[in-house]
Length: 325
Image (cartoon, rainbow, N blue to C red; front, side, top):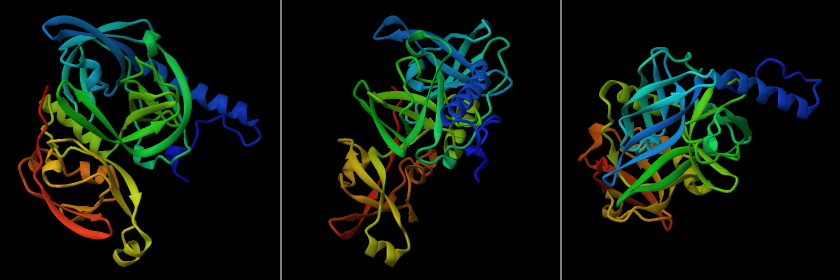
């Protein structure tokens, strides 16, 4: 059994299902609430002062928190309020719009760090709990299940298009202000950072995994992440049975959309293409492609093999550097 999927103590086999469910959600909430803050940021937008808000999760014992890039925008500082009534000012260390992650550094002591898990162990249907400050209501808790994995989220900031890859889809109720809060499994391990409300009954979260940990470490060290950009919106898809039998590869990425004018567009990639390999390595999930798109990929030809209308097509895309807006 996957230990990350095991519930906290108190989930007995003899419990009534609803009672057991309630106990798990309650235990997760009690464990996580002290480590999730309601945040307010101040900055300039369009030449005017603005204020925004959301949530953040304590990431390290020495005062770093993580939230969404879209929560902080271009703000340089803000304040964080915790469930124990304490409030501290923070500085924005750095943000990465492509992953929608940002790192904050508190100017004074804050609660201890939350425990973090690995989103790569998640399964569709698994119980998850969201903790944040929806609509400014600090310390709010909702629960649901993992509805889907490996989703892509197209976003836009001014004229610049973004694609947040490999997000978790959940039906745990999320509202404005939940962004930057924690999505946790039944062991109260944070496996995602809630990032957006895509529609009624549909919430999304950035996964905590090897790739996102690399991004967060780079933000803490350098204040920014130089990212290569392709401009694809994709979703995992199985290969046709005959091709899977011939290649031994069962999964691919189906291109759902191509950002106009992006490197993917210039390379001739099209919606409906199945991406089999990138950089001559098999591609089976959004993370497989995302791992290739860091600083050393900028301006470097990236060979991709796609299946289009039953035929194998080789294309060369040249990732550009993601512009900071």
